[in-house]
Amino acid sequence: MKSGCCPKLEKGTQLISKRWTILIIHQLLSGPQRFCNIESALPISGKLLSERLKELEQEGIVHRAVYPETPVRIEYSLTDKGQALEGVVKELEDWSSEWISLDNCEGKS
Amino acid sequence: MKSGCCPKLEKGTQLISKRWTILIIHQLLSGPQRFCNIESALPISGKLLSERLKELEQEGIVHRAVYPETPVRIEYSLTDKGQALEGVVKELEDWSSEWISLDNCEGKS
DNA sequence: CAGTATCCAACGCGATACTG
DNA sequence: CAGTATCGCGTTGGATACTG
Image (cartoon, rainbow over all chains, first blue to last red; front, side, top):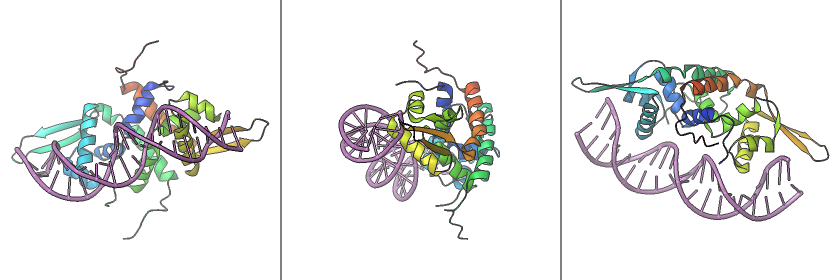
């Protein structure tokens, strides 16, 4: 296996290349929130979200906080490393809104 | 299927989420170049590269120029839309170099 | 609520071989 | 050089059901 030009970027791409990852981070950029909140904000199944969250936690991008209240509350938030991705997400958001056309957007109300 | 918060970003993520896509664009950011050049710069197989290039061409991100010289020369370059992704790539590059550690980088010379 | 387990279909992707 | 065709396996990922 030949190595590409820059292994770090290569690893970085693989991180955010996983489906939903960027959307999850984008969602988390609006503040810490609970599992079910993210789940309902995105068209993602619980299993996948659980997977992603765990991966992101292991990468040190997401922090999982457990509040042992009576109904246990668990909140996910971005770490510094995760927060640092804001620029990437923003850029992509800008680019998307500028260049992506929603021709296949089923706009049925 | 419930729709996420922002369909455009969603589509944007899916575009760049495909493996190698970002790396290819990154490579192309350094200027127009030929197929074999990209192929040897990245650890990607010809088939995949061909696929990606075609997809990116269809998305209007990459331009394919054919120079009918004696040995036909074909050069790939970024369109405006592709060039506009520079910010995203740059941000990701910065983030990667700052936050990604290469512990699993087999640094054998 | 916050997940985990299982099943299964679809896709991604790499290697290789082949074409013009 | 610049691809395309075929093959086959491993991974993804969605739906569903279940647990604490």
